[in-house]
Image (cartoon, rainbow, N blue to C red; front, side):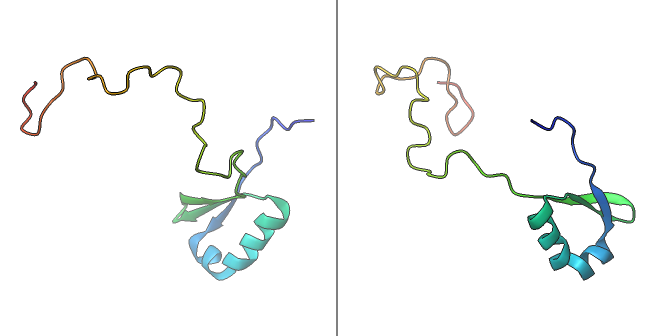
Length: 88
């Protein structure tokens, strides 16, 4: 059963966050809770669980993403700008 409803984030003031930071981080790790850190009532940061990526390896992560590249050394069509801003 997938959860479609987003959890409410508890608001925590910056001073309280500073005093309870490690406790809040442990709570997030254990329960996947989310917090919004505020400063003078204005949201400035969020604290929440890290989502795991589907691919952990950098090398090979783009495999199969190029559909066709038959002649890689041919110039790319279109106008290009050189360093002084003039079109070639």
